[in-house]
Image 1 (cartoon, rainbow, N blue to C red):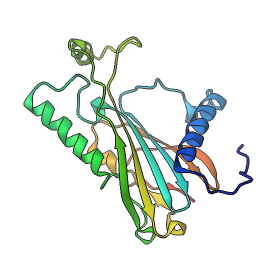
Image 2 (image 1 turned 135 degrees about the vertical axis):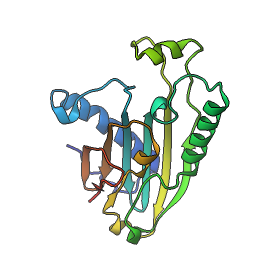
Image 3 (image 1 turned 90 degrees about the horizontal axis):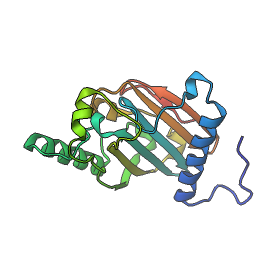
Image 4 (image 1 turned 120 degrees about the horizontal axis):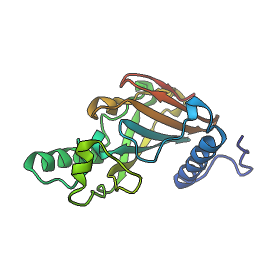
Length: 199
């Protein structure tokens, strides 16, 4: 499905993210009729996406999650409780720690997070949210973040575990899209300790 790079595997991390995005789009288009690649709206409650790319000793993970599954609402925080929940979520995501599990032998260390605050819905949209009515024309808030890890022993990076599932709310599925030197694939997990094979 993919062509080998004649110049070898030494490409910038951003190139891998670009390749990952192309893979996801192609997979969804090619397998639109298959259950395992069922196309969803970009924003679907309970569904979280993890895009994972590995290049050499660098591991890149992109998180895409509806705000309601992160903080429990999708409108701008108003109460002290909502503001505290949003601040706690921001600190957790920015830290990049305890979100994913890796083989100890791989010695993967968190390096950085690229994260911007969600675009919150305009006041008044919470009424429709509370009623469970979501039209395509409505705005939705999402948490999008990119995490970079450095693994001292990438050959030992055989799997990852989506620990973040235990920290989110009412998650029904995590779609994991993978791009590695050996290929590209997609699978679903539902438990924090479920291991996604990387090799």
